[in-house]
Length: 246
Length: 246
Image (tube, rainbow over all chains, first blue to last red; front, side, top):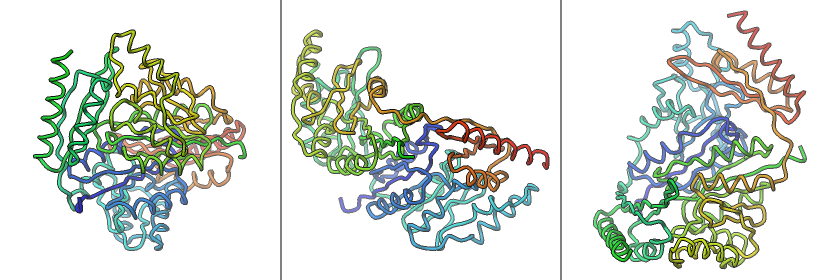
């Protein structure tokens, strides 16, 4: 498992913690990382408080291959992500010449004043590299193994699209879903035995409940196609056996 | 601020980190806690790995008034939350007599075998108190300041409904929303001044983007009605001034 690529996500924003805004970025990042074979191992949602952001980012960037943050890169006083990331990396946070010029040009072309608040969006930790923002110009940035992106879902997704091709891809995780018409109580015992006998796979069991009935989706994941096929066949045989005895 | 009641949430489940399942519990818990005046300060999503669950729960239960967990309390081998919470509290995890009997009775009444997998759901850290489950019988539990609940949203919400009346309510957080037709770049500077002048309030700025236009929702929160009204009036005056000059 030496080439397993791992990741963590840090969602920054009081609005998520208050319920005011419902996060839509965690699920998207999870889907994309699964597709390219990067294991998302941890997500933290933290408030707009510098010490909390610094502590969370430093904790996860030391543990995982990549860290993705969302939120707090706009022009208002509660947008403190750039400063917090600079502090985490112990570098100054300064106006980035290219970002400053891009924003200046963009506002000039729309006859909008380039206010101090707007200029804030050009600030980055020294040494950071831009992440392109095709929607609203103000760039995200990458420093070390940390990718700092917008919280607005459309902008986050566009930024992530430009980041993913640059990540070193782990082996893609293969998966197969087996739908069980039996609930977890029926299949839990034998399923555990199958997991034990197939250590190269990760078998997830997702209980579903609808109109008073329980059923289960079983997802087998593996980086190895043969291991995946073997575990899947054993699960199907187990379900057939239960059905025959029901 | 001595009676501020704080909380953290720990979401347990590989299926959320892989994107297989999209979390719907974080936003719900955030809404409910905001309504009853408890500040949700942190959320962590961790995989179905005992060491990760133990570390996350121990980190947050030491820092916050309450901790709420979701997921991992079903009957399958990947449901390890009860064991992990027991380990975090350094107590044994055993069959709970009442939960065992409740489940036994429920399955007997439906002529369903009470398998070892189903019996797993009656296991709890010694000293834990039930959280009622009106939907599928298997209870959650409370130990210390940690509330362990189901991951299936309908069951989680029912469990939370029975927990919230037992929490010591902080003062309810009041909030008022002001809609600004100006984007953050226009209002960011003066809004920051208003936040500084009104330390008893928390002013959040939520940029919106639709059809090429930016606008902003400004939410003022405070536990004190007079502080809230003062800050809101200053924001409205600021917006009126910008509109007059536009």
